[in-house]
Amino acid sequence: MGSAYGQGTIIAQHSGANDPTTEGFGSYGTGQAGGVINDLGYNAWVTPWAYRSSRGYGASINNIADVNWILSVTVRIATTNTDPGIFSAIVDTGASSSPLFSLQFGSDSSGNPIVETGGSNGIQYNYTLTDAGSTYNNYQLVYDAGTETANLWVNGTEELSGIAGRFGPTSASFGWGGNSSYQTSGTSQANWSLVSLEITPEPSAISLLFLGGVFLIYVRNRKAA
Image (cartoon, rainbow, N blue to C red):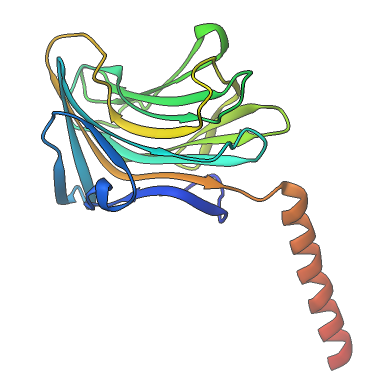
């Protein structure tokens, strides 16, 4: 499954069927979570949701408003008709202007995954994976500190761009899982194979590294000649 790009510094990450509390995350809620092995070929951590019963995880981070970062989530919504917002991954950059970015996950009546991301003034950006069914998919919010906006990538393809953050708390944090304050009926389940927050190099730095490598190859070839 593809991704936009990365290879930066991971500051918080959940992977596979590992208990997130062993990976540096705090836990909140009362839902009974647990690991699952080989779920459609993936290992994952299962978070349930029911009215006033959910399970989520969070970690404090340093202010990341002035650096580029990528939020990566590989998740399967295991239930149909799941309202987006019941399950989410949220990054509060710690800025005072438009600090909060989120990915909210749900499914339609056929189990097709739905992802929403909040924009400024409460505007929502929506994307549905048609004819996908209840499958694992990779979602990435790629944040550009220069424009203070993010682009949404789904399974390695850019689908939405220019997403502004929305106002929220100004203490930098990173959280994911079930939303205990969401009020609706029914029960739902999300299986999280990957949740990662990564600081990425500036494009100019990547370019310099590339040019430096090309120069070294040129010098080596000149010496060989």
